[in-house]
Image (cartoon, rainbow, N blue to C red; front, side, top):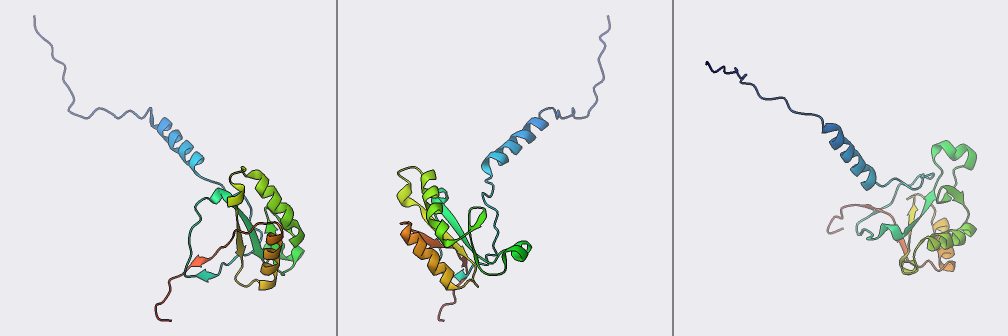
Length: 159
């Protein structure tokens, strides 16, 4: 009896791509979970001032933002070009800051309420009067931890 040998092709066997969609979906889910979405729509122009000494905040979940500046171009016909205060997703007045701070504190746990920081993001061309009035309202609301947003610039030694 003769032994029959099959001829083998010298090529590499094909790569199975059956698990490729699973890998793609795992990567997609990872990025969906780890990415944070912007909570608020910015309705004022904020070109931040420059600063040489800046530091990052450690716990961003304890930060509440107040934006001060001119309305964006699409809303200037309705609201004008004067500086406005934005709390959450709407323009508010100085009197509304007390309610805003109270609602932001209610969102936090008891232990974190004293560590709450208010971040003022004011346009560099905004008059200091509206910023000072905002600070006075924050004092009335007992929100004494205030931070100012700024762009970091390199300082030149000797100037």
